[in-house]
Structures are given as C-alpha cells and as structure tokens.
Image (cartoon, rainbow, N blue to C red; front, side, top):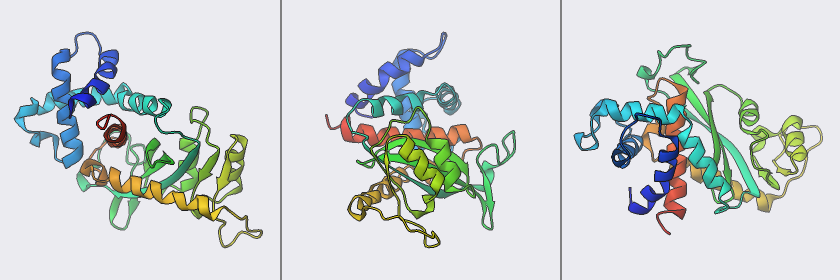
Length: 255
C-alpha cells in the first residue's frame, strides 16, 4: 500500500491493538499481506515469505476481523462526509463457494451457506451510496430472499437517505413502508403482478447501475469473487476490506 493509505489505517490499528500484540512497526507488513490475500484469492499457506509467517498474518487477520476493525474503518469513511449518502441503493449477488469452504462449526446455514444444484453458494447483500461506494454489507446463504437481506442491512444505525433505490425484487409494501418511515423516498419499479402499479422516477432510477458497477469492482478481489472461507465472519471481513479499499483508492491515495 502507499504511504498515504498506511497513514490512514495506522490510527485504527493502534486504537484496536490489544496488550501484548504485534509491535506497531510490523502492522504495515501484516496489513499488506492481508491485502495480498484479498486481491489474489490465494490460500493463506501460499502467502509469500516477504510478508512474514503465513500463520501469524492469518491470526492477526482473525483478531482484527473478530474485533470489528474493518467495519469500524468502513463506518468512519461513511461518516466522514467525503461522499454524501443522501442517495442510497441496495442489491445482492450470489457467490459460488469452493467445496473446501464448508465444514466450520455450527453448520452451513449458520456460516452463510446455501445449497443449489451446483453446490454451496453465499449471497452478498450490499448498500452503496450515489458514488457507488459501499455503505454496508451482509452475508447470507445463496437462497435467502432479498427481503431478508434488506432487513439485515437497514436498521437504526444506517444513515438516513432521502432517496433509496432498488430493483423490482425489493418491491414490497414492507420495504416501501420502512424506507418512508426512515424519511426516504423509495424509487423501486413495481412488480408485474402488483394490482395497482406504483410509478417511479426513471431518471433517478438510472443511477442504480452504480451499485452494479460497485459489485464488479469488489469482485476484482478474488478472495471475494469466490468464497474460500469457512466462516461467515472471515468472508465478510474480506468483503469489508475490498469495500474499504474502494474508498481509499478514491479519496485517500488520490489526496
């Protein structure tokens, strides 16, 4: 990573560091190793020796992930005001899981796996802002409906948007009511079977392509494009890492 990006991450790492942890001077190298895994999709054991012992880098990744570091950084970026969140949009994408990803404690459903004819799948539910930058993400099994994904993402902690975009898969009275109660205007095409179609602003709705482009950029991180992680916490961690790096590439490295 560049010096400007490290200068951004360093305060977060120092704030979340526990007693007896890795010396601060090594954090940058460890973080670079984690980013390398996220970008290449390689197995942890294949981490180049220049980043240090793979098991040590993996353990630090798990510590930071379980401590909520990546969500903390993403929330800070969203709260920074660098990209206004008055317009938000939601979508989901199904991710194929590697056959070796199964087997964690708790069973497939607890770890965000679903079954299909092709094997295990997971679904990423995502909210982005009008710039196509991630606001919040969640992981479920691949067969989980977009309605449940919406409920998992939209809560009291989510910044209120004046306009909320979604495709017709999210067309339900419950979702429209939730958006309205939060002070937003739903821009959602009506389903064909809705008895009384609800019109929507087609010009504003055209902005929704930005969340689709956001997914395309996130999937450049190969550790996200195919799920190799057994636990939903680790996989969501890589999603958040990819999300944070989209932000830093646009607002930190270009500063």
